[in-house]
Image 1 (spheres, rainbow over the protein chains, first blue to last red):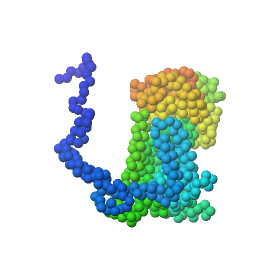
Image 2 (cartoon, chains in turn cyan, green):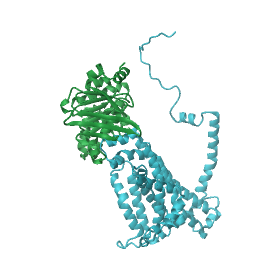
Image 3 (tube, each protein chain N blue to C red):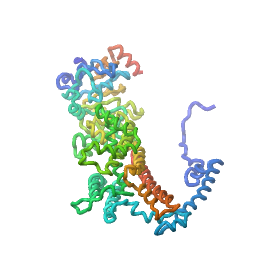
Image 4 (spheres, rainbow over the protein chains, first blue to last red):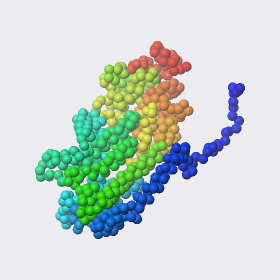
Length: 374
Length: 257
């Protein structure tokens, strides 16, 4: 029988765990070969990958047609991709019908935008406040002047009907992302406002936009917006779908942000108030930084959805990248059985790389934010 | 009530820090504060105790208008609390509060937590605010934690940080809402010691707590509340040794085993 009293005389030594728990071998054993069934599945999938991957790689590289003047070469090599088509159409895919002599303006806007976005998003970059100021205030004006033209600077006017291709997709996505988040935050705050007018207006807007398909919103923005505004400043053909996409995305963003606001305890509000912070400072310094951090995955999910939705602006006559690809595929000079597959595979790679980049970046930001707070 | 209590009697009616006069409050139809009359003198330390649901937290939350009363008047440092947001802000600048669940801002370091309100409410330059915050963090003995986030600190350290954060606004009055109730037992003492030091420096304090040792040692007066009303007020020695009201006797017999 065990005695009633016990007093330790020497400390228990700290031993290593009995089995291998770290390293590649241990990982493979627990994740790939933990049982007979899982070993069989692992081997099965490895075999499938081994069979499919070389074929896909050969289709995209060794068997593909890399240079040709027209579709003839591609019609002869039907077992490979026709990259020559994408190369030949590259300028059209990038600029649409933007006048050839003025395309350098798009290049400049894209290059400056890329530099500013990297500066802004690179978490260790110096003086990010400057990047924000340049990107959100100076850059939009610069981009508008360059892309549309200005008689003052001697840049010929280019109607937005001529805009097209990748740069239209990027402009749509950036405008949507930049405007929908702040608008969504305002709507989310409005929905929780103690003022009935503000609350009802926010709820009506959010529920209406969420209850209507995006294409309907686009048609409405395209056809109804001009009716509400004086005829003298009838909104631009491109501005209408932009307004539509911002409205649509903002409604979803608002619900995402509202979720973040609700996940914060009452204590944070009370502590901020007790310190004497007024409403805007309480929200800006204490509540929103936390609420938005909570919902980063949801916000980025909305951004990704928005990026996909840019393809729908073609229904109101804008030529985005996918629409440009559709037009290019119809070119009889390049008619052939491999053209369509190649074109859409390329489009898929384009969209995937942007969206995957956004997802990776948000994961990176979440890791950084999680570090300090355990 | 003016005859009750030993110390700071001179302050009682003249230049009071806080004065409740016939204060009532309801949550829906539930009468949570009933005819509260209490005057807290400058430099006075009041401990409020009572069973849960007795309205003691609600009482002190009315002082900085986290809750609003519906009848009667509350005057804090000469300013009457009304719907006027300017007056509420004025009061909140002078009244510090410490919560049961700390309520530090988890996305800011301890130093940033402390410097936030001086910078944005007092318009203090960041350098001065940081300096002030460091001074107060060293006073509550967690200077070495200044650059950590709240989640990395123990409960006792977090509560002391919360006290430092409130003190950074150099308040005239401090409110404590069960500051040790969510702490592990071994951390209660470090927080109570900090509060005792603060009391010794002459801070006007209202403390809602069940720490009867603290009440006996630090309080000028103990207020016992039950069912939304003040049942008994007295200096700590007579309050604990010779409670008068039956409900006070019952409550004390339940918590002092």
